[in-house]
Amino acid sequence: MQRPFMDLMALFPDETQVSRRRWFSYSGGYMSMESPIEEPEEFRNELHSPFGRLVRGLFYRLAVLPIFAALVAVGLTYLRTHPAPIPPGPDPQSASVFYENVNLQTDDNVRLDAWLVPALDPQQVLTQGDQALQGHRPAVILVHGFAQSRQQVLPLIKPLHDRGYVVLAIETRGSNSTSQVGETFGLNEAQDVAAGVQFLAHRTSVDPSRIAIVGVGAGASAALLAAEHQGKLAALVLDAPPETGKEMFDSHVVPNSAPLNWIAPLCRWTFEIGYGVNLYDLNLEQYARVIASRPTLLIRAQDDAENDLSSDRVQQIVAFLSGPLENIPVAANTAPAVNAAQANTGQQ
Image (cartoon, rainbow, N blue to C red; front, side, top):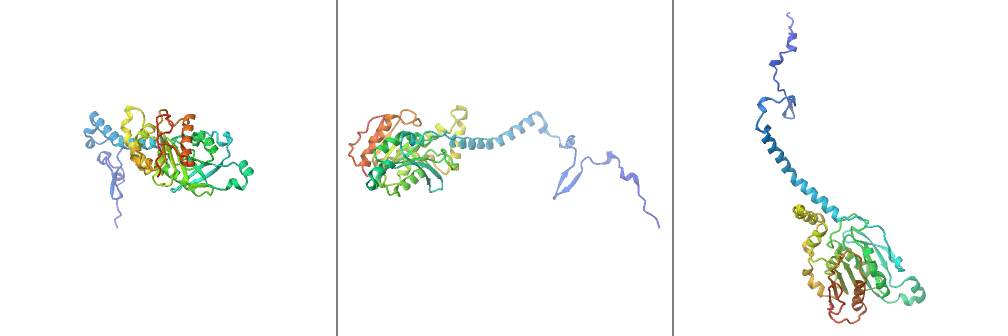
C-alpha cells in the first residue's frame, strides 16, 4: 500500500504567486482583506487628484448642510420659546392683599399656577358676617406677556381688589410652569385663558356674566383668541398686542443679524410644526369682529409692552373696567388717551 506523500513546501508558497487581494465570502457578499495602507494600482482613479478631493469634500459638506441647518433651527426655536425662569419676586401679600395659590388644568392637560384674590379678605368676612358672602361679584383674569410671569401684572391686583373684584392672575405655560412646555406668543396660551374663565365661572362667589380679561403683550393675543370662543365675556383689555404673529416671532426668535436671515423660514416651520400652531392666526385685523362684540380697550403702547405696567396704564385699565363690570354707563371713545389707546364700548 502506497502512503500519501505530503509536500511540506506547499505550506509555504511563493509570495509572489499569491494574489494580493484575498476575498472572503461574508453574508452573501465579499469583504476585502487587503492592506488599508497600500492601495492596488487598478483602484487608483481621478478622485485622488487634488481637484477630485476638492469636489468630494464639497459634496460631503453640501450633503450635511441641510441637516445642520435643521438642527440649528430646532435648537434656536427651542431655546427662544423656553426663556430662562424668572427669579421669585413679590406676590399680592407684599401689597397687603390676601390671596391663595390655585392650580388650573387646561384642555390639553397642562397644569398652571395662579394667584386667586377674593373680592373680600378674611377681615371683611369676619366683620360683615354672612352678608359679605351673599351675591355674585365681578372677576378679572390677568394674563402676562411673553418671557414674563404673573409678577408683571401685580400692579393691577390691588386696585382691582379695592374695586371689589375677584382677581385671577395666571402663570401661563412655559413661564416658571411645572410643565416643561414652550411659549407660543398667545396661540396655545389661549387655552390657559379659557381654563381661567371656566375656573371662575364655576365659583359661587363670581358672576359668570361679569368676567373680564386683561392681557399684556402676548397675553393680549391669548385673551383675544380665547374671547373668540367665550361669548359671555363682559370686557376685554388688550395692552399692546402684537399686530401679527410674524412680527412677534421675528422679534423674539429670529436672530437679529443679516447673515442669519436665511434661517428665519426654517425657524417658523419648526415652530409651527413643533407646537401645532399657525402664526398667521395671530393677526389683530382679523379679530375686528371679536373686538367690536364687547366693550374692549385696545392700548397701542409706544414703549416696550414687556416692561412693568406704568401707573397711568393701571389707572386707565381700572377706570375702563368699572363700566362693564359695575354697569356704569361709559360714553363711547372716552377712555383716557394714554399711549395712543383706543376704546370700544359697544355692548353685545
